[in-house]
Length: 114
Image (cartoon, rainbow, N blue to C red; front, side):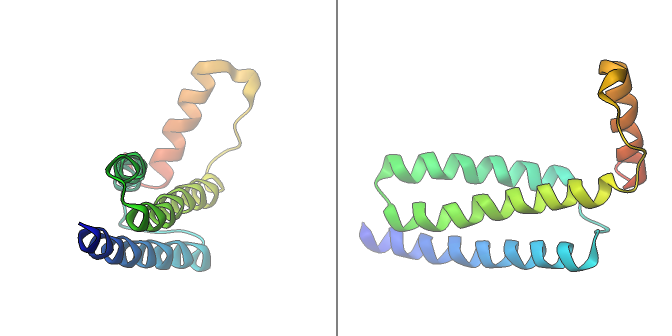
């Protein structure tokens, strides 16, 4: 079964490479259009699950490649939040939950999620 781990590892590393290209593009463009944030959240959660799954199956190569995929997804989400946040009004923690929801709604509208 080691060959299955190696084949899967190659797919994971190719995925990681594509994700890190997206991170680089987001970094250089300082923004993005046409990518919905739910896709990045879903695949971040899926890559987190894969880390647990590969470890349980005893697939060390896939696990190592999955780390690059997971952190690539997290980097994209972080950069998206940082760049898109600059398009909205600053949030004040003194506003509490209603203020946060208003801030979040303005954030989503500014990046055309709503």
